Image (cartoon, rainbow, N blue to C red; front, top):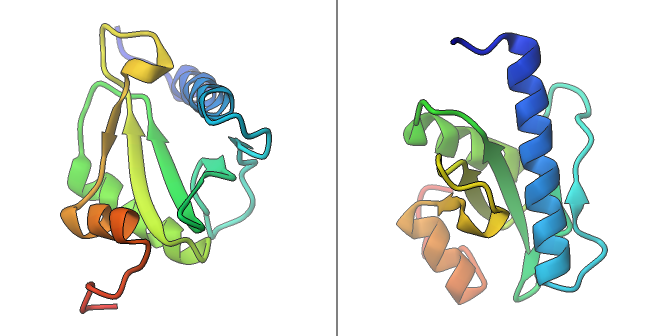
Length: 125
């Protein structure tokens, strides 16, 4: 059975809420929450996640069709819109319902920025 636009949006909202609630609890940080959509310049789906003082821009995807290249482009655009430091994708791991079992994907450059605490190694910015 194919998902309707309405059911897909509802599933996405539930997924974002589960991810935000899990991160807030696991990191003991009540500033982490689901972002409210605001206009054309999307800034990711989860607010308040930081590492080494860096603002992480998290894009959530609850879909069976994987489009990692497309999603990463979207996450990096949203990182720019958000004045973020690192772009990450949290995407559904089908057959696994717990938030902590979901996938996190990024590029190697974004991963190094996360670990190093800066984007100095990225040339094309």
